Length: 126
Image 1: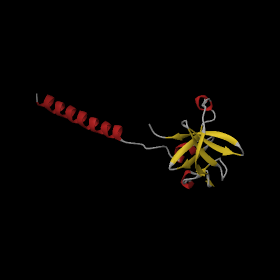
Image 2: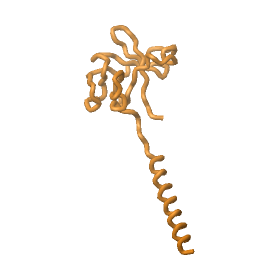
Image 3: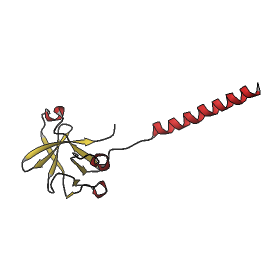
Image 4: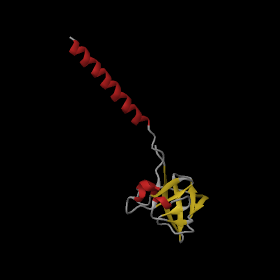
């Protein structure tokens, strides 16, 4: 009988410890993606503006089918980098310095390079 009591107490303790451990991992927040999350891929085409990463969306059918109106200028690319540690606001890994970024009336953002409009999406967690 004593063995059963000890076994029951150990089971209760194990359930308690496992339950606490899984609750911690569920409540952890990862935040918005960073340049590091994208630059590990060779074909990444991103820029950082306003502390948000924007990723090229040219190959997404639903984005390329959007009918949008060009809005206000959001910012400009001021530097280039290929390492996440070198990214700051205004940095891109492929867009040239001086590229203007514009809002639209859709979820897409537009980078204008030599008169060509390139679609980007803001990468947010959620």
